[in-house]
Figure 1 (cartoon, helix red, strand yellow):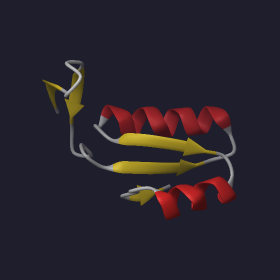
Figure 2 (cartoon, one colour):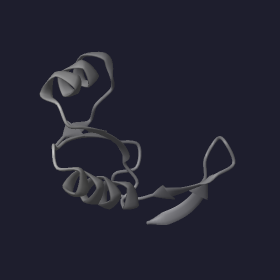
Figure 3 (tube, one colour):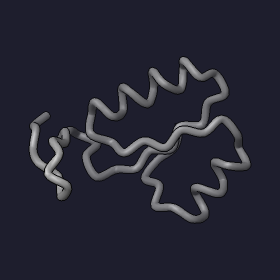
Figure 4 (cartoon, one colour):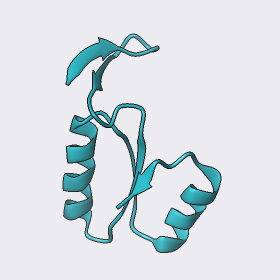
Length: 68
């Protein structure tokens, strides 16, 4: 992983998932946070939801690379 600067001037992590948008669907908050943190550490943009209905809306309207 490398550290660079994003468009806003903030530091961003460039990891193996950099540029990927990962949807995490999990109803246990602590599990969702752990998964989200692990993905963010690898450079992913993470969207977390606990409902399938909301997850499907993200898939239909967003640019999702993968879901877990």
